[in-house]
Image (tube, rainbow, N blue to C red):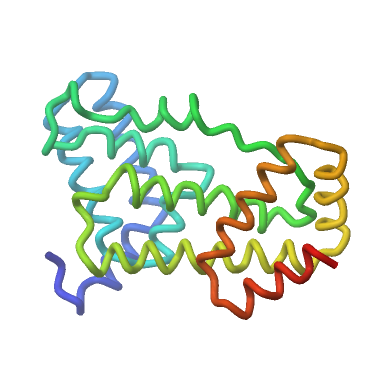
Length: 203
């Protein structure tokens, strides 16, 4: 357990390019050599990164450029026998098929959608038995904040919403599923924001 006074300095160090590059280099070498000891140490380090409950740190480790390596490190859970471990990288490649149903004009919103999926996967699949209360609350708050921003962007962009509803009226299945998912996610945001989205949909 890291004392509160040391969490911020440790998070800053873990976010440094030097640390991240070294971590990834060691991981690639450890996998190439099938070094169980090194991979177990990397699992403990990566798990500890997320247990720091630092939003900027969590987001950095789930960004597009490094998240596959990070999830790879989390495959080597020392608390599970090898045959019970989840191959997270394979799962994501096999099951995650993000369809660009509608065209988000800004890359930031698109990146946030991808980030939110990874946050949800981390909370529900990768670390559920390892999260303490603070880490669970931190991840949940990040997910809800992202959902709120994504849905707010959808609500405020008339062109985006009109395009989605047009595709739904044309019986486009993927658009319908996207809309269904948006309504499901809306249940997790405050009532006023949820009501505003619903009103926009029925205009």
